[in-house]
Image 1 (cartoon, one colour):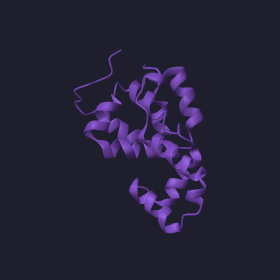
Image 2: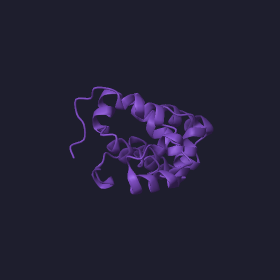
Image 3: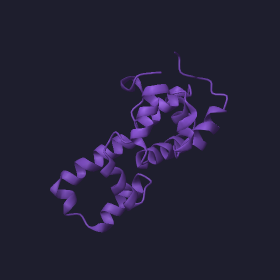
Image 4: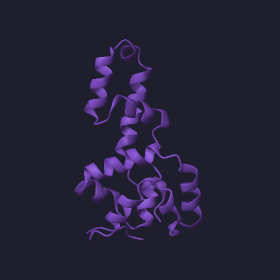
Length: 139
């Protein structure tokens, strides 16, 4: 399995980091509700989703990458060919409440199918795994 450090950084992480920097600025705090709603719309989220994602921190979707690596899925290729699907999986992973269990399962045995019982991305990942991808992870 590829190391976390060598995997693709999540676009969601970039959005969260940007949003947190904005929240720290006095300028954003003086913005009206309409401006904040516009920012959320610009990144394809509802205002509530944007606030929830930023509360999870910039690394909330990082477990998706080693899970994809365990399935021999290349996140760069999935992002290139299915950007909407990848973005949605990152959002779903960020909001997942099973990060601790997922991390333990990845560390113990990434090939153990137990993750399919609690992962909200299981169906999407299984469907992606059935696709004839040109690039798979090189191990």
